[in-house]
Image (tube, rainbow, N blue to C red; front, side):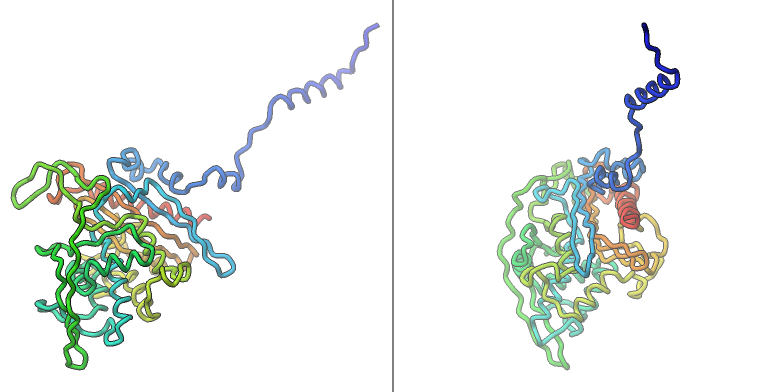
Length: 389
């Protein structure tokens, strides 16, 4: 005799079997998404934004390097979390005016060790017609990236002092070797500095520096030619004697300046409270606040991240403590960005090379069409991401 199951039970079992055979898919919640999306830079650089994609698709050709630091504050303590993209200290790029940043810091530190002078003491370089102060020269460096200001500070410090001091602080991957944009850029003899104190002149003797060693790293021979006078020399340009300040070193200098308490006393820059406050103010002050014409030196003149591709006014609650560099098609920016109003802060250093024709010193570079728009959008996306944390 056959036993028949009730129709209602058959229906129930059928639904149960179907349910067991197909698991419902769900979108990951916020916590799961954070686990999947480990590196913020990878997420940002995979964006479909054309300002990003045109560079990322040819990132090797553009020599892109990026170092980004998230800053976490908890119970009064600060911690860092670093993320990198193609950062490689052994591949050369020209740091341009970004070298002015450590020179400004070291000049203040050296002055701090000499009780005879301070940043407001008038001085001039032997043979120079300009009497100035370190305060004025450092303001020029950060407001408009003045080359003469850098060269005066370089004379005061000397090549060997610069490099030896940085290395003692644990910043060993660096080589500052020359002045900028003058015929005697590689002169090993530094000129005396004459300080004026109460109408009394005091001379600080110059120094004789060791010979400049050629860099033993990759890619110091670049391009297919370079302009020399009115002609083009059809051979790679040699960068082996030039300044060398890689992304990681530049980034770590910024960390030491902004967060000195995170480093040992040996690793710190020894600045007085007054000098450090002045340095931070100088780094973040816009050119118009330093008395420069706001049409020529607009707010983002030396601020590539976030605002570099626009001439709009930078909101007062966003402070960018930074130093840029641009020359030979290289664009570099190292910045600490802080929005006190919205509780956002982060560190970012990046470099990009935009020299499509591979000819150096001809002034034909894609700064405004590729390089600065990329760095600006990178800064905006990092800011947005940190805002949403």
